[in-house]
Amino acid sequence: MKKMKLFVDTHDKRTGTFPEAIEKGVFADVYRKYAQACEDEGVVIVNTMVSAEDGRMYCINLAPDIASIRRAHEKVGLDFDSISEVSTASPGDIYFSWK
Image (tube, rainbow, N blue to C red; front, side, top):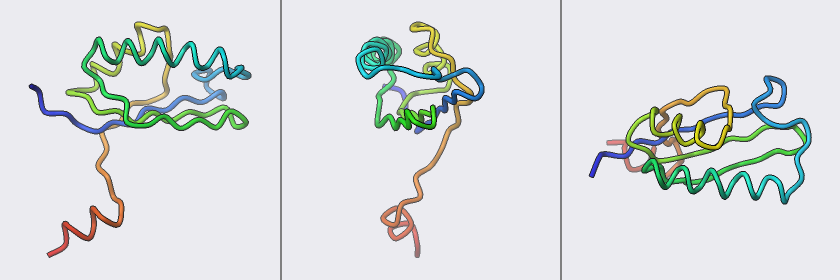
């Protein structure tokens, strides 16, 4: 099994990577297709945060590499602005890493 890394990808209506307006049912259908594409590519969806009013979406995923996430998006025709490898910085992470 490949080592999984944490990534966040972004979508924004101002750049055309998130629809200007989208109904819940349509979003749910796109999300189901994306979830299947992720499974096919070995990507684990951790969390997806959507601000429909602002037209932004942030997806947090575990994956072996950026290419896996890119392929999952391409399979469903879902554009993105960026994909970044990230590390967590929650109070628990900071607490346990301090010496």
